[in-house]
Amino acid sequence: MGFAKFVPLLLLAAKNALADTPIAVSDFTNNGGLAAAQAAAPMWYLPSGTCMPSAAEDGEGNQTNGVDTDNCNINALANGCPVQPTWQGANTFYGNVSGEPFVTIPTYWASTFCNGDSSGSDASYRIIYYVYFKKDTGHKSDWEGIVVRFTSPDGGNTYTRESVIMEQDGNHVHISWSDVNDTFEGDNDWQNFSQKNLDHGKFYFGKFHHSVHQDWYTSAFKNTCPPLSADDYRNDDYQFWAYNNLRPVSVLNPNWVWGKADSPANIDICSY
Image 1 (cartoon, rainbow, N blue to C red):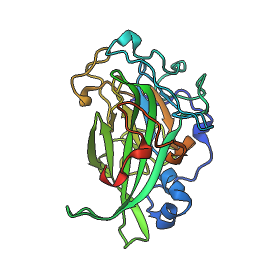
Image 2: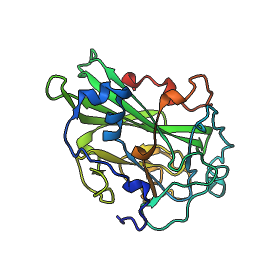
Image 3: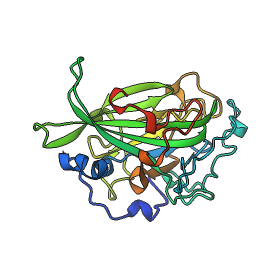
C-alpha cells in the first residue's frame, strides 16, 4: 500500500495522540464528549471517480440539497458532486474543495451512554461518526459512517475502544476494535497501514454505494455496480481525517428530509 505523496497542513495540526491509553470518563461527560470524539476520530478513504462527500449544511443553518442519481452509470457517477482535487498519489488530501463551506469536509458526531441490555451487552459509551454525500448511485442524499463502542476496564473511570459498527447498505456490521486492519496514533504514523489496536481507525467508502469497510476491495467492480456491499470498489486514493472538522449532530435539523438516507440527528445510537 502506498504512502502519501502530499501532506496537507491541516492534517499536521498540533495534536497530542493518546496512543492506546484508555479515555477518561470526563472526556465523555464534558463538552458533549468532544474530547472522546477527537480521541477516536477516524480517517476516511475514498476511491477516485466516486461521488465525493460534502458538508450536509453550510454553517448558517441551511441544508445541503441532494442531486440526481446515476443508476450505476460510471460516466455519471460523480455528476453533481464536489470536484475531486488533482490526484497526487495514495493518501491525496480531500479538502479545500471548490464550493464547499469548510476547508475539511465535516464528520458529524454525537456521543451517548448506553446501558447494558438483556442480551448481555455491557454498558458502554458510543460515538457516531457520519459523513454526507449528495447521492449514491441509487438515490439522492446519502449518509454513511460508523459507531465506535467503548467499554470500561475499571468500573467506569476510563473507557477503551471495544468495537466498531459499520454502515453497509442498511446493515450494521460489528467487528472488534482489534480486528480493524489499519489504525494509527496521530500525526507521526497516519501514513502507515497494517497497524492494529491504536487510537484511530482507517475506514474505506465504497465507490458506488459508499458502504463503509475496514479494508480495501480492488479485485473487481471498479467501473460497474457491485452485486454485494462487500464488493464495492475501495482503496486509499483520497483521505481526510475526521479530527480536523468534527461537527456535532446538533447543527442538523432533525426535521430535514434526506430521502432514503438516515440522518445521524435521528439515529438511535444505542440500538445501532
